[in-house]
Length: 313
Length: 246
Image (cartoon, rainbow over all chains, first blue to last red; front, side, top):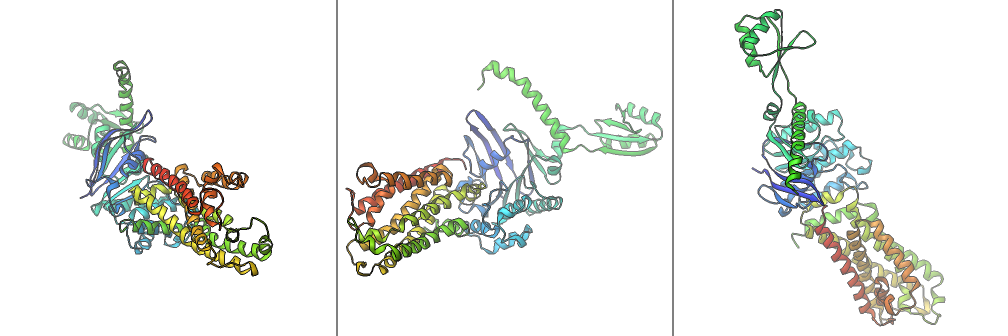
């Protein structure tokens, strides 16, 4: 069981605090989505975890050890950072071979991972001649070389075509099912919603949320139900009796806020309301995310005068 | 050494898989051979009559060109890590930066030393084949020392350039400092082989190529000065690689 533990991690560049006392844990067996707007500090955090940058304070451990102390790190952690991170005049196979031998990984694995990511046909082509999507696949191949327990992927679907996006989603889900730890950063909500079980949300270097996908959405967005009946009068009176305040939408349906299907279904059935349609208004990750960010911005605005008065920082 | 060898093998794969670095290494040998043949087949014997003729130093005439290839190799092998963010991937694979740096520099120094030694003996023997009555052998005083020294000199210049590249994070900037220095500064102040000019990395090291060293350093003393330059550049590069965020 190898997880990632980030503890009070802080990184400052001059006066700018890119990562601000960040603490979270990434568990094995699930895909953890690492969300935040551009510049939130996601990539910086991943680079700190991988020992590429030095933290100002705090620590990041993988399976209880700092990444830089791992002897053959690719066998434990596979990382995809920036799709550009391969010398453009080297052929793909040599790029992977140089990485493999540095961690005493058999050369046979190079051909295996090229096969896995669908680049066998282009193994002898120069990386410079690769499309963005192919480079992304090459980066993923590098991450998979050491058959690692932990995968850290920064924006893996960047540049992939629709087919590639489905492929990477299935790959990440399969890796998690195999019991591996998968941390995936993204700024695309619908994309993340399609593969993540757990979410870590970042804004301006600080942790905003660390929750399962479902808890996160429910905590941010109130559930609502959409209902249509052939007897509006009866429907409204029954709902009013139970304290609901439905509002009409523009297509003859009623929206009941703060209610779930389990609340509305039984009471309308018991009262004999003829129901034509009853469905839950799916709260999206996107809606939840924006609700959270908006909330946070409000709080940040409230906080500013206090911080100034207190002379903090 | 066992801990280093996977990183070393990796660095060697990187060097031979890039056209620029692989061909620079070949160029050290090929340039020397071609230029030696051209020069000695044409003007070799006439040079032998000039008053300050040093038969050993003359034999390494082509080394002036070979060293540019060696320096280019040193910069290109290291600067390839700064292309397309390659260093991130390299350090993710070998996160111990001391090990990474040592492997990288070994993979630069050792091949140049080997190719340099082969090149220097080849240059010497090739050039003498054209010299007729003026030909000297490896038994000539200073000749063997110059052949061995030339190989070491090339390796030191490559390491000097590689260290500087690590500091500057750019092969282009490193080259645009070293090459003008060698071609212009060293050349202009060249014949004043006393004072500060004597301690320039290329000037000092080339004393080992002479039968009769000029100036005060002597053949091995001169090479030691070049070694000190290389060591300083290497240490500065090491410090930068250890300390900087990748």
